[in-house]
Each structure stands twice: as structure tokens, then as C-alpha cells.
Length: 70
Image 1 (cartoon, rainbow, N blue to C red):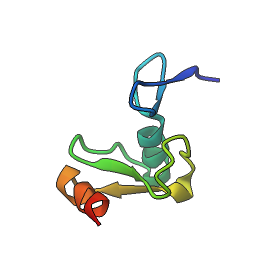
Image 2: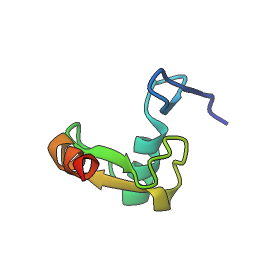
Image 3: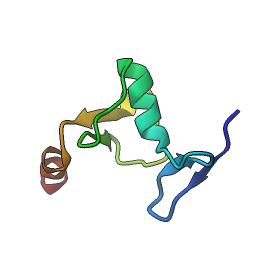
């Protein structure tokens, strides 16, 4: 099993690559790599909950920011 750690912002990352676990889960779900501009959002706002049902991918940071402004 891959080793992970929690970064200083509270997101889980793979130790060998620094890749966000949430991005990896989303990529597996959609069967493709996410674009650099795409942002993974934790629906319940729990950064530790990287389950498929808790992740939503926004096309860019502006679209993601709109959700947090509401």
C-alpha cells in the first residue's frame, strides 16, 4: 500500500509523488488524468474524506471559488 501524509493545508498526499489523493481518486473514477486547471472539491468539506461520492471536479479554480462564496 502506498504511503501517504497530510500536508500543511490538511490534504492527504502520496509520499512518493506528492500527488493529492483526492485527484488520484477522481482520475480513477473518470478513467482519465485531470487537467492542471481542474480542481477537486470535497462536497462535505472534509479534506480527509476522499471517497468517490464526496468528490466533485470543477473545470477551474474560479468555478470552485463560486461554491465557497455561497
